[in-house]
Structures are given as structure tokens and as C-alpha cells.
Image: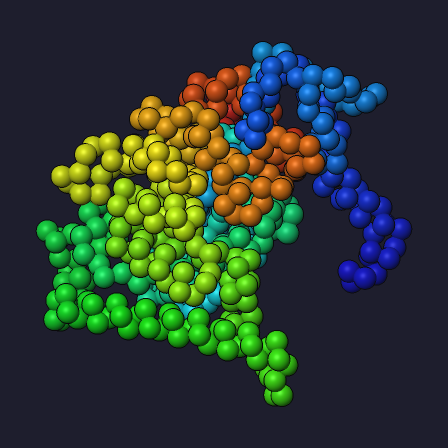
Length: 451
């Protein structure tokens, strides 16, 4: 049926219409203050958008005849914001399993791609767009932190996280980078995790409550940890054997999707994204990556001071979790999470922000704002939600700043996007202007207009 339609005049017209729609209209933003991120702010300049790309930026840019012009006097233009860890498009209502597509069953599932399961009609996309989030990393395992609701705690490799736009008719149209990271749950010895720490609270016997008894205490935990490390190492070794056999075209060679998916990791084209909150698991994860000669990104660290020299030396980027968060331990400073971005900056680390759940993605600009209030330079906070994120996920040639040739992911605001009072006047994704509406706005308008 598809072949018949595409070969007909109707199919040809439809294809042309879709191509024109995807390309976006030519738009001229005149006389605004532009914050490129990759360069200092430029006052009273213009931006020309054509075919979904930024064609030119500067004070002498001239609008072609007949194009749509947006008067930018008194307004600001910023690149669209990037959230570096979400479940957008994969999880709608966490309490309803049928709406959650994270955490597949299986210990090693590198062949799974989060992007193909993205639901473009998710209500979450509209909610985050109105606050300027134009792109997001979506992870296949509940935010990159564990086995997810379906996979169980023993899952080690959950699949490939994708960087997507927050608008599009299909997942193909939304993708920025189909495979941006391989999501790995690194083995842990456990121990104290505090509020959300992932290791359990000694004052609250969770394993015993759920029928999981601890036999042998620390000795048994260490034995289990070593067994898990050995199992993960074995999978990497098997992947390398497969890589060599494939390259040699060994007689009787049979392709395996799991090992095929590992090839970009082994070739250094795809980083491991590993959740490690405390110093010891961070060191272990970095040591494992170095031994395997693969790239790594650390997710949601909460102890940076002790491992900062190591991370800087090995050039390991980190994705910081929510700044508006409680301390991990009851005797930790109240501002532990607030000051972490400034600590990472002073240590010379490359970092970006992630919210790690769909619930808080809309508040990402304000998470960055709090980090500024607690010592992080403003320009660095802006980079952490734009250019730094694009560089970490390998798409800095496409998005993350306002530069010629890049995708036109832009927002026009009447003030600082980190200020809750600021309104976004216009939002562009792939050069297409997006209607700033969502479920909450529609309900508000519906009931306000009730007679």
C-alpha cells in the first residue's frame, strides 16, 4: 500500500508537503539580545532561520523579502535547553505499568533502543516545552539509575539512551541522536544510601521487610559484588571476541544483536552512562572503563570532592542530579545538593544537569538558578543546560548554541530563563515554531471560559 501511494500524484504531493513542513518556514528575528552560549552576548542583533537551520547571526543580517519577521526589541534569544537525563516519551504515569516502557527484563540488553519506544503524544512534552526544554536524553531504565519497574535490580546493561527533540510527529522526526549512550547499572557494595541514595538505610530494614535476608553481612555483599563485576567483565570480553570474529569473517560466523550493539562502545563511539553516587563506586566505574578502554559518563554523583582529581585527569564528564534536593544523609549539610554544581566547576569538571524523572523536567531552569545562587557562575549554569550537554552527548555540531549552521532550537524570552517570572514568547524546534500549550493550560482556559 505504501508503494502505491508514494508512486501516485497524491503521494508525491503529500511527500512534498511533509518535506516543506519538516524544513520549517524562513523566519527573521530582528533587533534582539542574543545569548549564543558559545560566545559573549550580542546586543541588538538579528537571527535568520531557514530550512530548520540558523543561517546567520549578527547586526548586519538583512531579512529576505517576504519572510516572516519577529520584532525582538527588548527581548532575548537563547538556545533551547537540554535535560541530560529523563524518561520523556517512555513513562507517562509511573503508577500505571501499562504507560511505562522502561526496565525491560534481562541482565544484558544493549540492543534495546529507547528511541523506538518514544510516544510523541506524551503530555509531558507539552509541559516541558513551555519552559524552554527543546531536547532531552531519554533513558531505557528509569532515568539511568537501576533496573526500572520491569527489569529488576540485577539488570546491568539496559540499552541505548537517545537524545530527542521534545516535539515531532514520530520518533524518527524527534531523534537528534538515536544512540547517545549505553545505559549501565554498575554493581555496588550497597551500604548507606540515605534519602534516595540507592544503598539502603540502616535504620530502616528494607530487605528484611520485603523478605530479602542478608546472609554473611559485608563478606557476602563483597562476594556478590565481585561476582557481578566478573559477569560484566565477561560480557565485555565476549563482545570483543565477537568483534574480532566479525572482522575476520570467521567461517560459520553468526550475527548476534546483543554483541552488534556493543561494537560502538568498544570502538569508543558510544559512552557508557553509569549511575554512581558515592566516591567508591565512582572510582570503581572509572577503573572498569579504563580497563575496558571505553568512554564513560557518570550519572547523579553526590560525592565529588574525593574523586574530582580522578575525574578531571581521566576527562570523565558528569551529569548532576536535581539541585533542589534533600541531603543524602541526615547529618549532611542542608545545602549539599545546592553547592554541588559550584564544587564540580571549581574542580574543573565538564558537567551538565539532569532531572532524572519526568516530574521535574519542567523545573530544570530553576534547578540551574539555585546552583547560581550557591556559587556557580551564571554563564557556567547556562552552559550546563545547553552547550555542555550537547558536547557530552556528541551533538555539539547540531545543537547547544546559537551558531551558523546549527539546528534552530531557540527560545525568545522577555527576560532571564532562570527567573520564574520570565515568559517564553516564541519557541522553535528544528526551525519550526511550537505552540506553547499543554494539558494544564488547556484545562485552565477551558474552565476560565465556562459560562
